[in-house]
Image (cartoon, rainbow over all chains, first blue to last red; front, side):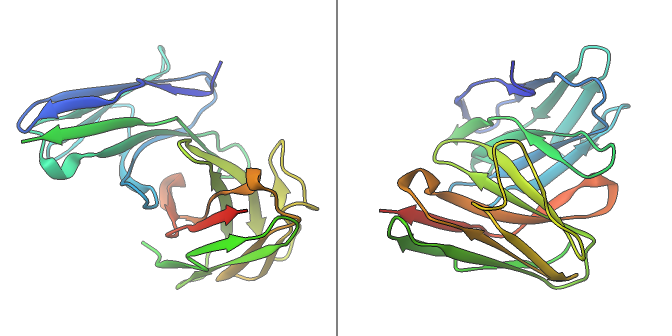
Length: 111
Length: 113
């Protein structure tokens, strides 16, 4: 079983749509959670951290369920510029800052 | 966030040769990390580099193949030794920030013929 699993995608949605990505992680000792965005042929960039209480940043909402070891990302009112691969990332901490990346879910927003 | 640069940005190398990738940060950081992203795959951590100590390698990666230097708090190098086509990947360095976040350099795209 992979340590971080994501929806395989790709997701093809029209502009303005709402899209949700899911992610599960296997290590219950995981401490921190993130969504990164990676554009084609670019490095990953931090989109947002995910907090236990859930958090929102504009059109983006992240949720964490520690009991189910489940993370989600909701994008509302999709823009063409949202087209990218979204990486679910878990930090094991516990001594050093080790990030475990999911395989990513590709999003394509079309006009 | 820190500004991170990598050199070279890309290279095409012959099998059996070695390539050293440099990572420079514009501020002092405690920990630097090296990742590999193979074609169509996600990122895999190669090793963690702390200044003044030996790098810590992840399972499947060894120092003889991927020697790392960390001479100061703003710089690190990763060498890919005795390259084969299977080493063709993007190699990225990252630095830790607050709240266990990491920020990445632009990557080095390596093709081994």
